[in-house]
Image 1 (cartoon, rainbow, N blue to C red):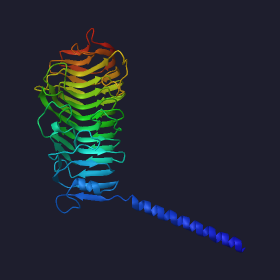
Image 2: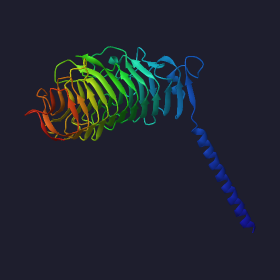
Image 3: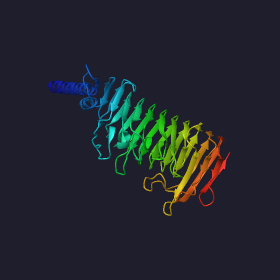
Image 4: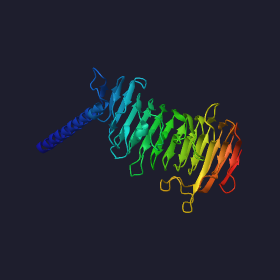
Length: 399
């Protein structure tokens, strides 16, 4: 009996200790994940610097930034909500001298990187001289972000730089950076140099929705792109407005509203408004693209139109249809493209839908196939062209 009572008491004591340990562990865990809210403003807040608040924050914290202009370069490698008071009043302005990014690639005003970096950024204007900066906001290195309700403004005149992006998801240089992903929604971008929103490199992905991008108008300095997905990157382009871009230099180079260049398969370009552009949508060496329900117009006084939609495969003897692989950039087929239900209105010049390459382009055409269905095409020199002999390797149907 005594042995039984001893064993029972011992078991009860052990169970109690286990229960206490569990309670302590649960209590500690609850305590450990409690998120804090940090405040930033010129006077009367916990911090006067956004970067100081970022450095002090723990993963999961929220940083509320009050109205002011903050001359700072930000680096975010944590899980944070970074919330401004509104893009009209909360401004991140690039300092005169910027440090090189953490991966050694160029410079940015806001850099978000690392696998821990799950960031929501909302309610800011980010501005600076983008001709001298790789990108205003750069997301890379396995980060996962939501960029919404911001303004991105380039404050300098256009130059011939091939960078100067507004928002860049992925690698701005060819390197082994791990991919990132983003939701980019309800932002306004202007003053960018090469592209407003760029998604670059294998494995990088961004869904780009409800943004407004305004280019620099007619220029011979650079072929601007509103939204571009390149080199095996992925994403969808939905319900954006892109306007006011024209390249006045030598043909066949062209400014483009939405540009897919050797991108991943199965991308949707849908219900966008593309106006006052030299070319509305260009698809090169990218397969299974749905171009559906877009309004592509060239208004009086806007850009001299080249193409409403331009689709082409770009070949080489060794590539066949290897596209979207990030290994043979820009080379590959443009097959299974659906062009459906778009309104494509020209200014009296150019071609509404062009399938194939122009004679000036010095490369072998790869296979290009498209189904052109239920579009309204008007105001062009030519409504639909499948490239002239020697410049196209294509098939398609018009319904």
